[in-house]
View 1 (cartoon, rainbow, N blue to C red):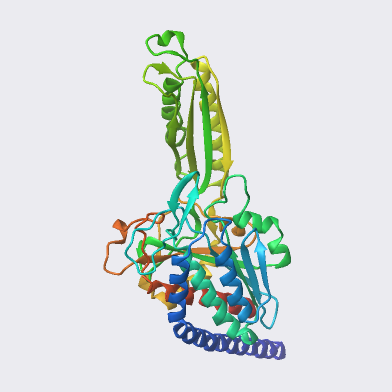
View 2 (cartoon, rainbow, N blue to C red; view 1 turned 135 degrees about the vertical axis):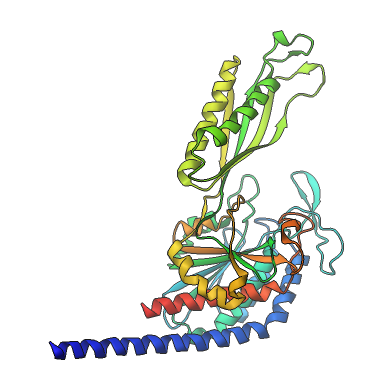
Length: 440
């Protein structure tokens, strides 16, 4: 018995020494990575400014993809282009194929006209939905591209010391593909991305004006909402406005529907389980003041943080719309455009990664944030593998981030000092995850 205890003690101590050696090696790697990220900061900012000045819309990121691919090839990586139309992927192969960490950046811009001011402000214009508009990286995707390009360079420089591999995903069309097209994360996965590259975990970030530069915001579990858009068409009976009794007024019916569907979130679903939002953003009907129109069309959106509630609200919306229309002696239809699922950070992974973020940004700068009712197609990757998505502050320190122009505003602004924090975070999370798997 004593001999067995002695052998177990030796094995335990040997294991501890091996784990300690692995962590010491990881510490050296992390220190080397931090030095490498600092050395590349000027180039990182230069890339960001280039992409900001040259934005491209969803599924049309042709020059963007070319520049990304050229950089990755220069690092000696095998590069796939044309993934989900304009996406670019590459694998940094370490000593082993696994653990395989996916790092993702979205690369598309928005149909937003940027005001003059920045020396690298976008002057790109295009026609979108039959309207002339500017094109702007008003959601910070230019920073995401630059950060991931820099991460590729840092990780490729130490590939012979990595215990696993890194899949670099430069994803198009996060803002949504043009009407009639497919795109984004869903199309990448449908094309077999994770079959070709059997990823173990996925990390991503997003610059966020509601936080100050250098601050990292996170949330365990549900973090960002699902979204589904819908179109309601109310059938009426056209008549002269002076004789409404001869009509079925679709404007009145539509007004009742707008009020009725607000009771779904406030009265019909259990608000203690998860928040939900149902909003009407557009109502169109009629062309003259004295004609009751033949129909009314409404557009709206649903946001939820629970997959079951998402389906339940869709069902209740259809029932409410149809019943109100029937009570008025007419009909109404609902058509859905199903959007992104809930962005859910794996709780165990989140807890394991927080020490790395705190060591990079400082414990006081890593904060738990409120639920975000915006949606994000990074959620599709999280349906396949454990994932962790976090927010990177964009508003200059000293300014009130709560009053800053939001993402998608033409006044959206990113303090470039935050880019290095984002780069250190992605590289640090990658090394931390590989180290934890090696210790297992």
